[in-house]
Length: 204
Image (tube, rainbow, N blue to C red; front, side, top):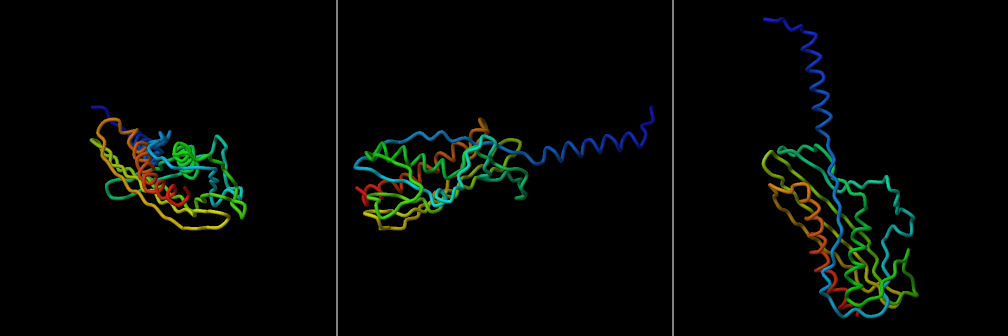
């Protein structure tokens, strides 16, 4: 029987620990190519859209940028990685609203800020997207929460402050890599289903 030196065992264990620690922190990329439902009607005229931070110059579209939109956790709730997106949530949400509101009949313009000259407008004052994944050997549990706050403008003044929330969750055994992206889209659709009818009713 060959004798295995303690130095060799120590080296092997050290390599294993390094590899294990390197694999512990992982990143999962999510992409959302929003598909408009196009079921809303009644929008007329020009509608200005703006986000609260657009006037501050915080929008960064560098290809190397990534936005952390959630975390991967183990069964004990410990964070083992990040869920990232190449597009910031503000841009994903505002673009989805642009598509739906254009389909509803509005002519959409993006503005840095709204003012007294604004006939009809929306300012997205807060957009929060939070994803979570809990993987195991046999399945992946995932959830997505979206919080959206907006100000509705008419004739140069704010006429309403509104807030919408959506939370969806699901489990996948197959196609696990796609689950979080699908939930992101579904949660966004739910927020739009709540918000767009209100927008049309108040800014018809």
